[in-house]
Image 1 (tube, chains in turn red, brown):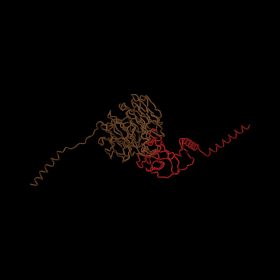
Image 2 (cartoon, helix red, strand yellow):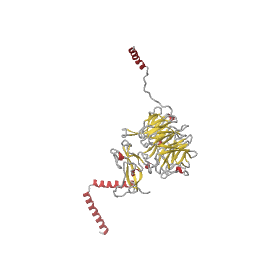
Image 3 (cartoon, rainbow over the protein chains, first blue to last red):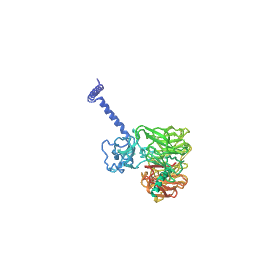
Image 4 (cartoon, each protein chain N blue to C red):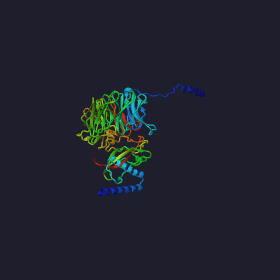
Length: 176
Length: 369
């Protein structure tokens, strides 16, 4: 038996042992579940065109989310969900968030940094009609839809009727 | 004696009553539209018809909340609206249609089913356009993929859908064609054949920068084509000749040599309007910085378009969001204020003629016939 054969034997033995240990500790369903989670997570990463920090820090901010002057609303056009039973990043009860959005770049007065803000319309209910807000920093005409706030962005939802808008921080904006 | 007189009067009373003819409830029909007619489209829902000659309301078109504008076809006595309906009001099955309204009665007379893709925008004039054959209607779709639906209003049928990636709006042009504005800073021309199928597609050179100085998506009809204005106030005239798109050299509404013009910007919702007969161009102005292109105007500036020179200005008591000038021989400038009122000015003397205090719920767009 030469040294190469011995090495293969050792690898076979080790792999076999490890597999048995793994099989004892985990079921197939849980393994597939974990693998699936990992794959979904990996596929989501390249979709976000922002600088992501691996930590789970929240953005430090000041201001009143029910006021149109709030820093996140710099390119928002619509009714504020914070006045309609939702929050700055959650739709009101029964309203469905649109997965397709327009984006703005807003400067946070706390750290003086620019952040990419996703304006998700909440859909499927009557127009809220409270706290109308219209700001146009970086807003572009309709032929540039991804930066146009004149569009009702209820796409990809069960009903396309517009209710209100949330402003979600996607991450720190990067130049270029 | 006195009691006899009273008795006689009592006998006469029912006779006097009986000579009044009881009224009946009738129905009003509209006459043929005149250039003084205009439409106040609500931000969501109905459109109110007015006659600018006396400021009286003529009637109302019931529309869905997702109908940004309508398109009149006076030749056929019809008005078209591209509309989205849900089977349960705001939910349920979606059905998109082009509704044909009779211009005399303002009631729907036909519906043409179209793909469920109609752009749901805030009030917006140029998402719908009738081509010069008065037969083919183009409707802008946004899903958010951009495309155009073609409808034959004569035969009442859906013709087809044309994919128009990167381009939006409908600007009808000669010989059954229309222009679109594109996100790369160019214009696109699409021409149809007699049956409404695409036969030509042409792109202009890139002539503006969407990042540095975008063109407003609010074009204004001229005699030979369209007038466009940028956020910084640069005006372009565009026209179509055969399959060529002509774009003029730009001129600025802001004269850099005039100090009094410094700091002013064009802005609002309907930022510019043109009286084609006289060449009077009206722009909605405010003092502001970059990114204030949606702000209401505090003044209206009037230009001789041919001479590219400002010849007048109106200082506004109430900030204004919308401008529209009638195409009568004597133009009437009609404006929508931020407070939701409609005001009319004599188009040459620039004097306030009248105010409509209650023009209908939330005016969002002014348009003519």
